[in-house]
Length: 434
Image (cartoon, helix red, strand yellow):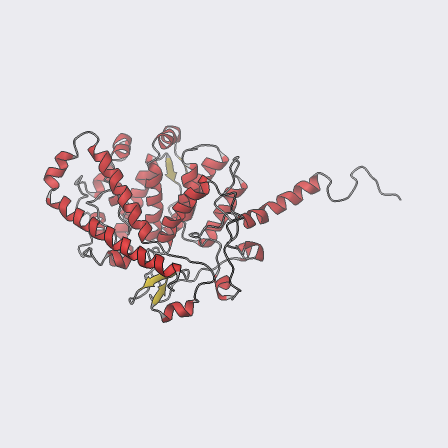
């Protein structure tokens, strides 16, 4: 009898191919009717409905292309390779693929067929950080607490238990949905080669040409230097125009602008090799930081701080939550196009503003579910989670980390409280007899 995981994979492939064909046909149709379509979009409400419909299609397409992690009692990695399956950078089963291993979004390894190793410091490598699938807040799509040693060590199969998951809330479900998207990004889109089956490869490299000022963005027809020189400080234009962010921060996944193209592997490599393109990307980052009331203090480390006009811009962030999607795109793009070390300072900034200083309360959930899990460095991601847990003060549970690890983090505080209250068994009023 066919296993449940194989049935899931086959259904996933069929769904993905279906939506890929639909997307390809709609793209051809809209390109043929682009003059008429531009007039139709001027009708009040039509553009909003189209954006919502496209967002739904993109989400369904992403769901169909997710990596199935499966349970621990499935076939071993050796059997996966014998059956013609490849693995992504963290050893998860991806699907049939005969080509080379996809390269990391932030760096190109010297040997393309060998995924980069993830070094984990001793700070988070003890037994208390080994997560069981029966944990209340275990997430199937979050590999933050997995280690290579844990995968290599054989253990008896466990039956997954859902009895202990009574504490799961709507907030956890929202995080789990976000984790699917963020893991797909961190694993460098393991099913990306399937999207190229029905879609012609971007040989012209439009994103690179845009950043080298060899072409303008579409449909706005604005060059990169115009964005940097003429749009800075034009906050209303930056807020209400929705077709530029896909050009300023391109990704390997589609966005809301149908005329913006996704990045290709070769385009990423050429972008990383171009000092001009990377310099212009840094200027785009500064442009958006200024829009959000943030300034880049150190170009070497990526450290950021509040700008002089932060109060008004923070209010705008709270009033227009679609900027959370933009910030997630910016973080992904930084990791893909050579500014991986910029991810941690920006995420740390938003965690401090939301959890410590009490600002940007409508950004807090996105910072915990999306921003934090866009960080490619697993060890830094763990440190950020520890910082978030230590400063989390809410009536709802902290769902972004397994309960076992939360207990390990809480233990030192409990021991300190016990010692401070005299719970060490000593009588604080007693004196030594001489």
